[in-house]
Image (cartoon, rainbow, N blue to C red; front, side):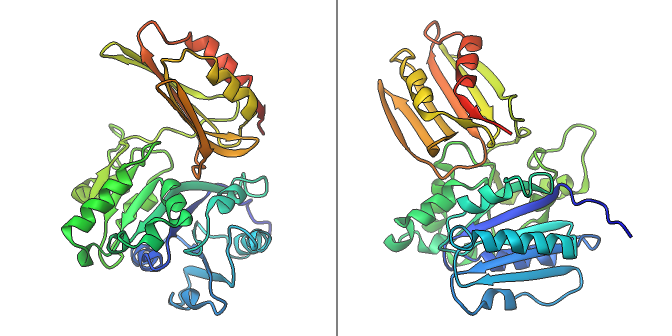
Length: 347
């Protein structure tokens, strides 16, 4: 019997530093799994034995695969692709959860999930980072580049072990989660892994907890009921731009004008052309962006006439904002065309 092709399977990346509580949060998700869904969980851990995989109970509606002894994000990338292909075609899950090693940089996983092999098969939903507020005072944690990059790449942040943290530690965790551009969609405190499942099940690019008028579903009702537990940073997550069709927004207030664009993560900019273009804009403009370039992903930040370019862990989409006093902003149509001429690759 011919099986229907696999398409648009929701995939969730659950990241977090060593001991943050990722597996406990996933256990909490499993406890609320819709009965009609079959889930697949892929667990990678830095050790050789594969303990984390054994922590999940065997059940007919959940398939758990383990990849011990390395990092999904680097030396096991080829193994990850082969394992995913086998897992998807053998078990045909309705939802996929991937838990990389606590020491693993998730950028490689995101690149693989968006690659040609899985482009029509998987639909990437919110990247979730689990944060342990009790360890923020440890230099080996908050100064570790992987910890910072995991947090930077997050769409949503789970502040775990909230019952074990002091008020000061929780305040520090919330401040760390909020201090980011582009803005994260949500931040939530949980105890004992009690993650509100509606955050996971919400349709891709739908409002995070407030439904469209006349289109409220069960997940949205549950989220509204739990809204006191969730700090929404972006009330609405717009649909992912399609290659060749960036989204544009313009605003004006208090004598200033803003221009903003978002591009598909599949589009790649020529970094030299891009920096030359941005550098040619009037010196008084405030410009910030995260962009996928031929030199990997970069963060561009210009203020006071000085520009800074540095590597970025952000991978969700390319974004650019230009802010300036009324009358100093370049023509939006001209700038949009000039930016698009810097794109050298799109599928």
